[in-house]
Image (cartoon, rainbow, N blue to C red; front, top):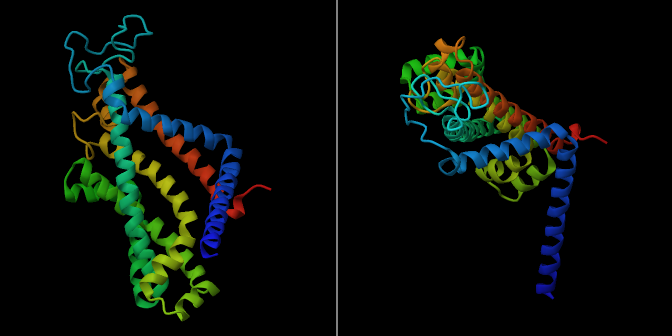
Length: 303
C-alpha cells in the first residue's frame, strides 16, 4: 500500500514537472525573438566547445605573407582566410571562434560570482533588516552611484590589468542588482504563511533563508542573471578595448578591436567582424532574457 502510494505520488510529481515545462516553453516560444536568441546562443556554445575542431588555423599563428588580407569574398582575398587576416597576419575567423570561449567564460564567471554573493547579501539584508540591512544597502547605493564602466576601470587600475581582475571588477559592479532584487523578494516572501509555518515548525534562520524563501525568489534572479551575462561580455569587451582587460595576444573580441583601431579606414574587416560578434552575442542573450521574463513572470505572461 505504501509502495503504491509512493509510486502514485512520484508519477503525479513527474506529470506536474512536465506540465510546468510545457507551460514554460509555451510562453517562451511565443516570443519569436527569444527563440532566435536561444538558437544563436546554443550555436555560440557549440562554436566555443568545438573551437579546436572547427577553427581553420591557430588563433596565434602569424602568416607574414598574408598581412591585412581582405576576406575571401572581396577582391584580393584568399580562400585560406575566409574573413581575412589582422595586422600581424593572424586568421580573423579562427580568432573569432576562439574568442567565443573567452566570452562564455567571462559571462559564466562574472554572473556566477555576482549572483552568488548578491543572493547571500540580499538574503541577509531582507531577512534580518535593521542596521545590517542599512549597511548593506548603503554600500550598494554607493556602488550604483558610479557609472559601471568607470567604476570597473578604477577597480582594474587598482588590481592591475588582466582578464581575471577585469572579471572580478565587473562582478562587483553588477552585484548590487542581485542584492536589491533578492532583498525585495525576501521582504515580500518572509511574511507569507508558509514561512511562518516553517518557523513555527522549528526551522532555523539559515533553513528559512536558503530552503524556504530563496526557491520562491528565483524567477526574477534568473532573468537578471541572463541580462547580467550579456552585460558582463559587453563590459569585458570594453575593458579589453581600453587595454585593461584581456591582454594581447589573447583572441578576446574587445582586445581584437583595440589592436585594429589604427586600421579602421584601410582595413574595415579587422574591426567589423569582432564588433559584429559582440553585437550578435549580446543581442541574442538579451532576446533570450526577454523570453525568460515572459515565461517566468506571471505578470508578463500573455493571455
